[in-house]
Amino acid sequence: MPDIAALSAALAGIEQSDDAALLRQKSRDFYWYSPVLKAQLDGKRADLWVRPANEAEVLRVLVAARSAGVPVTVRGGATGNYGQCVPLNGGIVLDTTAMTAPIGITDGVLEAEAGARMIDLDLWARDRGWELRLWPSTKRTATIAGFVAGGGAGVGGIAHGTMRERGNLNGVRVATLQDPPALLDLDGDAAAPVNRTYGTTGVITRVRIPLVPAQAWRDMAVTFADFSDAARFALALAFADGIQKKMAGVFDARLPPFFRGLADAVPEGNALVLAMIAPSGLVAFRDLVREHGGTIVADQDTVAAERDPDATPFYEYCWNHTTLQVLKRDRGVTYLQCRFPFEDTLRAVEAVRAKFHDEVWMHTECVRFGGRTTMTALPVIRWTDEARLNAIMAGFEAEGIGIANPHVFTIEGGSGYRRVPGDQLGFKRRVDPLGLFNPGKMASFDAPETDAA
Ligand SMILES: Cc1cc2nc3c(=O)[nH]c(=O)nc-3n(C[C@H](O)[C@H](O)[C@H](O)COP(=O)(O)OP(=O)(O)OC[C@H]3O[C@@H](n4cnc5c(N)ncnc54)[C@H](O)[C@@H]3O)c2cc1C
Image (cartoon, rainbow, N blue to C red; front, side, top):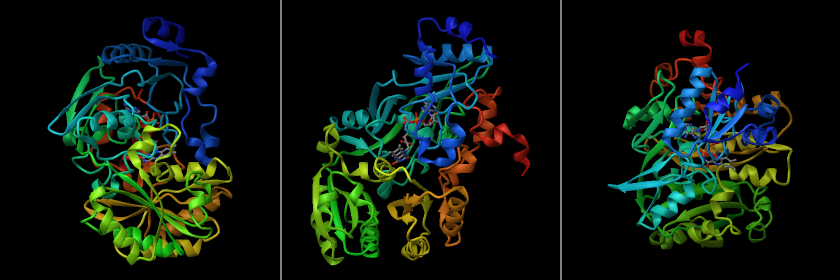
C-alpha cells in the first residue's frame, strides 16, 4: 500500500484532496453509458486528487509519484465514455483544469495549455478571426488535451477528418515518468504516441492545433418522410464540395422526440438531418434540400446558441450527445460506434437498419477518413444483455461495417478504425518504464505476451 499521507506531504502547496466523496467524484467519467463498463468500473477510485497550476507543479507530482511507485491517471473534463480517466489501481488522479491559458496563434496554429476548455479556445480564436477545425459535441465541457488523448472525432469531421489525420495535431508538450521526469516537445508525427492513448504515455501540458478562418455557422434542421431519403441527402451534402459545412447527422424518426429544443418542430414519424452550414453555402444548401424532398423546420445561429448556457447548439443533439439525450429519459438504452464502408455506404446502413429494426435506432454522422467520405454511426441500442450486444456488433461486421467498441476500456480493445498510427508501445516503454501512467488501459504494455501475437 502506498503511503498517501507521505505523498500528500511531499506535494504540499499544490491543490489537493483525499476527501472520500471528492475522490469518488473525481474518479469517474461517462462510462456508465455502457452497462458492461458500469459493472466493471463502478467503485474504482483514486487515493489522492491533485490539481497542479503549471508545468513545474506537474513535474513535482510526477517526481513524487515515481519515487513512491504510485499510478498517475490524468483527468481533464472527464467526459470520456470508456472509463479512460477512471483509475483502475488507485493512486493519484491528476486534474488539468487549472491549466487553461490560450498561449498564442502563430501562422494559424493555436498553442494552449492542456486543460483549456474547447469552447473557450474556440471563442478566443474567433475573436482573432479563427476557429477550431474539430471539436467533440462536448465542446462546452471537454478540454483540448482530453480531446487529443481520449476522443478525436466530431464536429468538423465532414471537412477535416479526425485527429488521426496527419496535420490535425501540430504538436504537444508532454511530461514523462522517466528518471527523472522531464518535459518533451513533440512535433508532427512525433506527437502520435500521445494521440488517443488515454494518458498512458504522459501528461500533455500544451497542445498545438491548426485553425481555420472563422465562419458564422448556421444550424439547420431538415426533415424527411423516410430515413433513407434523409441519409441520401446527408451523404449528397457531404459530397457537395461547393457547400462549406461543419456537420451532417442523420436521425431515425424515433430519436427527435428526445431532442427537447427540436421535438415540436419535427413531424411525428419523420427522420431528421442536422447540419452546420456556412452563410456562403445556404443558397446551394436550400437547393439541395429541395432536390431531395426535405423540409427545413428550424435554424439558428450556432455561435449565439453555444454562447448562451440556456440554448442548445444543434451539435449537442449530434455525435455522442444523441445517446445522452435519450438516456436522460430512458436508461434502457446504450450505443455503438461504427464506420460504414466507403463504397455502397447507404446499402450497408439500410442492411443493419432492416436486420435490427426494433433494437437499433440509427444515427449516422458524415465524416472523412484519409480523404474519403463516408458515414460513421453512433446508433442508440435497446439494451438486453452483453451477448445480444455482441450479436448486434457481429451483425454489423458481417455487412462490412467497422466497429470501434465503446464497451471496453483498453485502447487496443476499443479503438478499431480510430487507432492512431505510430509506435505508441515503444514510446510508452521509454517515457513510463515503471508503467505508472493510467495502468490497465494499454493492454499491449500491461500484458507483454500479446506483443508476440
Ligand atoms: C455526451 C457526450 C458526447 C461526446 N461526443 C464526443 C464527440 O463528438 N467526439 C469525441 O471524440 N468524443 C466525444 N465524447 C467523448 C469525450 O467527450 C471527448 O472525447 C472529450 O474530448 C474528452 O475530453 P475531456 O477533457 O473530457 O477528457 P477526459 O475524459 O478527462 O480524458 C479523456 C482521456 O484523456 C486523458 N487525458 C486528459 N487530459 C490529458 C492530458 N493533459 N494528458 C494526457 N492525457 C490526458 C485521460 O487520462 C483520459 O484517458 C462525448 C462524450 C459524451 C459524454
